[in-house]
Image 1 (cartoon, rainbow, N blue to C red):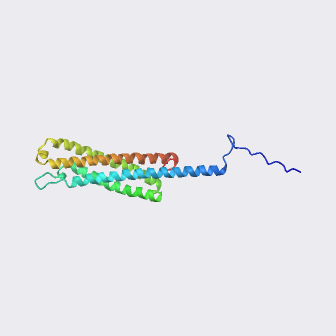
Image 2: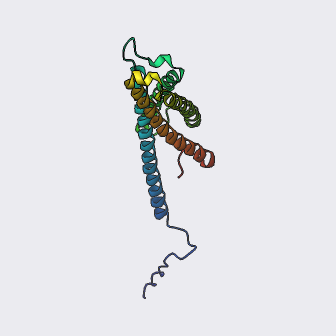
Image 3: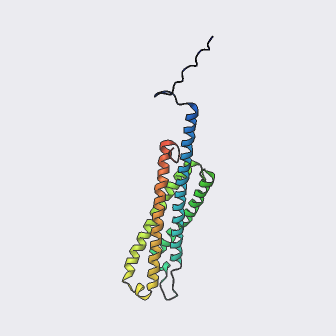
Length: 200
């Protein structure tokens, strides 16, 4: 007797269930891509945090060392320049902390604080410090314009030039902090929509 012929092999058609091994492979591929995107995103945040720290620190150093002797003007004699120094010093400390938190997240693949708290902490503090820094640099710019044609700059042009450099560095720090704020806001929105700090 002949053995019965093997059943015909049917290729999957539209609407058929995806084979399990294909499904698991697809899920693994999606997971790997998401992890890689998250790491690149975290590296971008780290670069912005580090840049904000460097510029804010440089601005505060230029402000604090802007004295040419007992007869020359001093930065602490002007309220706007004291504001510039204080704002940049605070932003430098905050950015240093956030840089450390970003390094922790890259190495551990987890936030330093509980995720919900970390996301709202970053976003809210980015907003507050960006506003403070922008306010300080605007006040410093107004003072610098006032001093341009005054006796202060005529007697000590180096003082005015160094003040301008400190203000310009502060503005650069603000830009990097503002970009960081946009990314932290993006993470909050993703968390509210999908429950994750980065879209899958």
